[in-house]
Length: 116
Length: 112
Image (cartoon, rainbow over all chains, first blue to last red; front, side, top):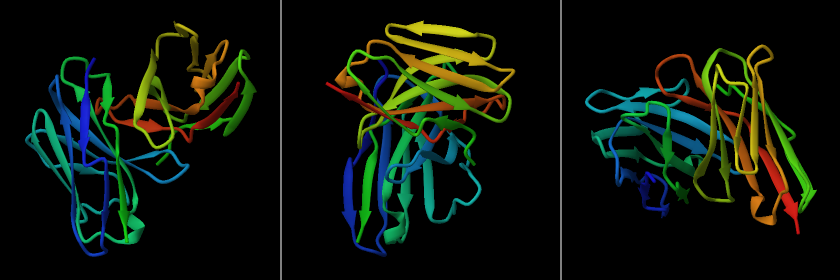
């Protein structure tokens, strides 16, 4: 089955630093990738949609200058949380829409970010 | 913004019993999907039902979709302790973007 990896799985950083999270598909290609954020005991909130070769589309209320998304290739997307603050602490999950299916999203295992 | 609402928010049952979770949504959809999430982990895709389908089965899972009521239900039969997890419905809006909007989720506890 399709596998999506995320790295790192867990990161602790100091307030003010930037953190980069990688999302990579291992055995398929995806033109569209999504980034979600999940606070404890809550649902997933879509942050942004990125298509390979174009700028990401951010959901309302998500600061594009704070959450930088780079859709580098058909198998790699990165999310950089810039100047992280404690309120950015969350579980970040990526997903990829398989290029052929257009329906099936494959989710990464998530990255837990803790900002001190 | 959240599209789906799920109920119940939490459900506790004994092993062997059936568990039913409901999901309601607000706008037109291409399909509706159900996912499972174990605590602190990623999502596992369970089943997808398209807008022109009314019922779908996969193993011990049965999903129904009523587009007139904008609602779906997930039934897990003969539950096991390993089914303990959070379950989310997600709607693929009729927007051709592939975006999924997740419901609030139901936390299921199956007691051995």
